[in-house]
Amino acid sequence: MKKIIPITPSTGGSVSPNNIIGRDKEINLFWSKLEKQGITLFAERRFGKSSILRKMEADGKKGFIPIYKPIEGISSPENAAAVLLDRIKEMDLIDEGLLKKLENFYNKTTEIVEDVKGIKLKKLEYTWQKQLHYLFSKLSEKHSDKTIVIMLDEFSIFLDKLKSDEASTIIGFLRDITFEEEFKNIRFVFCGSIGIDLVLDKIKKVGHNIGDPLNHMYKHELQPFTDDNAKFFGKCLNLGCNLNMTNDLIEQICDRANNIPYFIDIVFDKLSKINKANQKAIEDTFEEILDDTKGKESIKHFYDRIEDFYPKCKSSIYILNYISKSTQTVTEKEIVNNVLTNTTEINRLEINKEIERLRNDGYLHRTIKGEERLYDFKYSLLKSWWKRNKAY
Image (cartoon, rainbow, N blue to C red; front, top):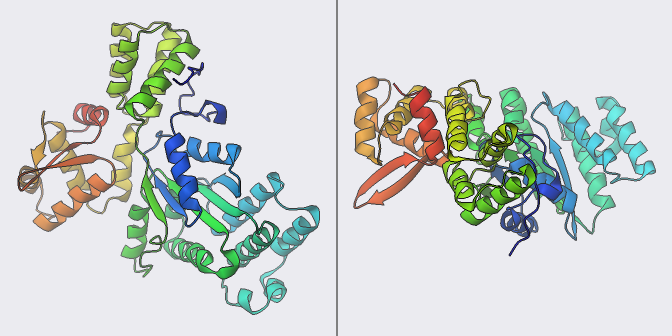
């Protein structure tokens, strides 16, 4: 039996690697995959993606050099090249002599840069490409006996903020890096709370022929905790908050939170602040979460990203509105008929594509009964919030 350790709520903030629990299976899987290929890691906000990557960097693994860097707020490929160099300096992964070479290289003009590495660099169009190519080259040479894992957090948001031609160029450049022999010990992890496929679709829609630039990477959608891990997490929070809660109430919290780490955490945070752990306090806490429409509790993120990234956002909203008002699973035929009564801007095939998009993006769960496809929200917490705040 695992030892229960006292953990205090982080309410969405940075979690100490020592307090990151319940993800050993995923971490072991990622290390195994990284021996041969990179990873695209996707989940909605607050599922614990960043915590996993920070823990991998903090704990490490023999034969690997993990480098974790959040890049959500970075606005250009040039800045991305600069912050990666800064992170590598912070981690002392290069000695002083090599560091001076790298910094000199970064500070040179494009014309001078082309003479440093010869013909290969002349093939690269932009300064940031040459900088990253040189950085990866020196890093790979310095640690040729290790697998270097560059973990870029919120990579999909970073891509989306770039101009479409910049985004197309950088995704192609990083793909090419993984296929060059001199970089055979470099892997990338692209992590995001927005499905990177949604961002790539936007790039393709404006005319960039990027193909499938991630088909060489292992794709993983992070799921909520298992029942056992959720309950263990709840017990650790219960001990850390000194709430003396019964196991039945802990299980109830986990179940209503759909085993999503952030929502378990925020319930315990709210309970600890009022120093109550009874049935009514739990009910009131979930009511507060469901009443939030300003994004404070992070559920609104599910709605916002549909408006920002879905090509047929109105139709997707009609679909979710209809399903949220049903007490049971609904057939695809019922969904289609409802959408077509609300809009004539979409046809039967396009509705099917939007249903699949919602399913692949973590909104819907599908079951097959006979020859019919039936759908419901994947998370009951989101369904309740959507029905209360968005359905019409």
